[in-house]
Length: 290
Image 1 (spheres, one colour):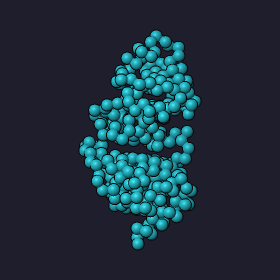
Image 2: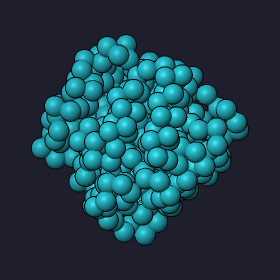
Image 3: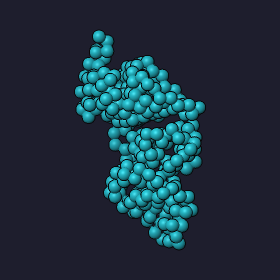
Image 4: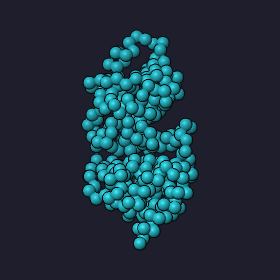
C-alpha cells in the first residue's frame, strides 16, 4: 500500500520553532516527527511512502534515505510550496483505491503525532506543548530500546546520568546521555532531550530542554522551551536569546570549552559506561568546589 507525508513549512503561528531545524525533522523524545510517522505507516502495512518537502531536502533525504530502516520503500520529492491534502490526493492517488490506505490516512500533513490528530503541533506554542504532553506516555513505545518507566509517569533512558540527589516529578522524560545534577528538580510536565546537561540546584518545570543544551547551576526554567541559547515561553510566546553561556547555551565543543574544560570532557564521555560517567561527575563536582 501507498501513502504520502507532507512536511510542514512556513507556520506563521509558531515561527520560533523553525529556527533550529525544519519542523518535520526536529527532535521530540529523541526521535524526529518524520521518524515516528514512517514507523507508524510501516506498522500499518504501508510498503511505499512518498515524502513531500518544500526545502531542506538534503536533511530530509539524509534521514529517510530509501526507507530501509523501517522496512519500506521511501522517496523524498521537492515541492515549490506546501500543497493542500486535496491537491496531493488528486496528483498522486487519483482514482486508485486498491493500493492506498483509506482516506484520510492516505495523505498526512505532519502537524501532529500518530494517533493524536486532535492535538496540533504548529497552531500555537501552547498547543505544541500540550501535544508533547499527550504524546509523552506513548513515546517510549514497544520499539524504544533503553527507555524505562522507573516510577509511574517518569521515563528515563538507561544511558542518562542522574544524581541520586535529584528529584524527578511525573510526568517527565529524561533522554539518552542527558545529565541531571545534584538537587535538581525536574518536572512535572518536563522533557529533557538527548545530550542535555542540567547543572546542580536547577529547576525545570512545565518545560522542554532541547537536545545538547546546557542549563547552568541555580537556573529555573518554567513554561518554556530552552534550546541552545534560545529561550521561548510557550505560554506567552515571548522569546529571548540568552547571551551568558554560564546560564544556558548549546553543548557544541566550542561552547562547552567556554564554560569549563571539565564539562567538555563530560560531553565527550557520553559514550562511556555509566560507572565512568559517575567517576567523571565526581571529578567535576570536586573541581567546582575547589
